[in-house]
Image 1 (cartoon, rainbow, N blue to C red):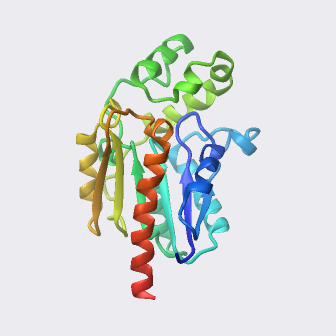
Image 2 (image 1 turned 135 degrees about the vertical axis):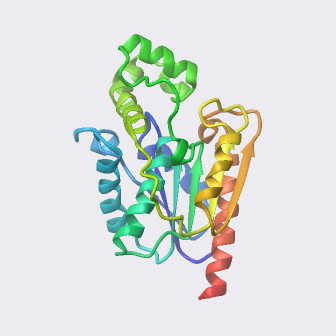
Length: 245
């Protein structure tokens, strides 16, 4: 395969290290580049983002700095998908680098319907934990571990704040490349039916893969299926790049 950078953006309550287990399972020639968010992982001491705009400005700088291959794709799961969308908008607006060759939006509602549920990020801790457990919007490994929950609660709350305070501007550019949507058939937060609406943003190609018998965190409990789907797409991207090189 031709060299290609796969940038991955963490989801609620996770960090860049979540994607490390992907590396040995990816196609040869794929360079995994997890983008760490402020306030977690190796950046734990940095303040958490206050807005999607702040997060995207930071991610843009990191992507430009870390990009080594001429072709790259971006994968975002859940709130990471929303950040992927707005990061792509920033790439297009600034025009300093080539746009991505492909985009993955995993368990992420399209931006024009990003949030129409009850606001939960302002709830007291006990109610907040109760709601996110019911919604299934946070990894069960975190939710079921009291010490982990205590550590990650501020991060999870900040992630929900980003998502719930995001306002779709309505004048966004069409996505510049083909798009792959991944969803779980049991997902209550980002239902497969809702995710089909990504088509309105994707004039250059759209495909939607629904994983069976799994919910919002199929990226964890169906890891091999998720990576297999990514690898299949990356092989097609590679073939297209060879045809145009």
